[in-house]
Length: 203
Picture (cartoon, rainbow, N blue to C red):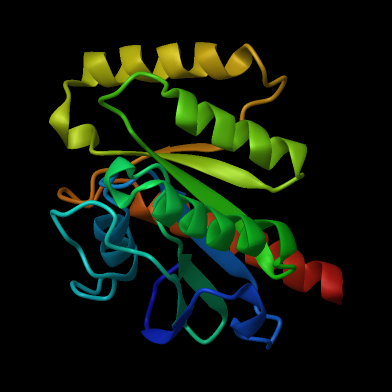
């Protein structure tokens, strides 16, 4: 898939105020500072589409971007940012949960994980919650440029082993580096294949 056009549409905290035109939505989520904004900018080939910040916890809204006038890329707030305080974390959690559970147009959720870290409890619990709620999701490992190929393989296998403790079948997994433009085409091809199936099923 080639992205010819990517436009910001709307930001809000209420899933009922999201676009109502029935186009499929592909949402991106991860812990704060996982590289989500950089990945979105790489995928769309637009340097400032999603605002990047060295300060974690920047995204606090549901952000919709229309891609090729065919589907929405949705930038969700990061979860688990400790410095927000309990009340702030609860508010963000409610925004995320209500969108994910109630948004019928959500076609696939991409969960971003930093390849450099071992499996974190907060990520594993979040993915388990997605499974319990029958939310289709894929995993995107970010920042692979920060490790050697052997270390990437090692960390990936360790993560798969951890997931296999609770999952009979693993979700699709993508390896990316926003800095070196790695993995973006594979993610876009995956989205395109789902969109093709959706169109085919409607015929």
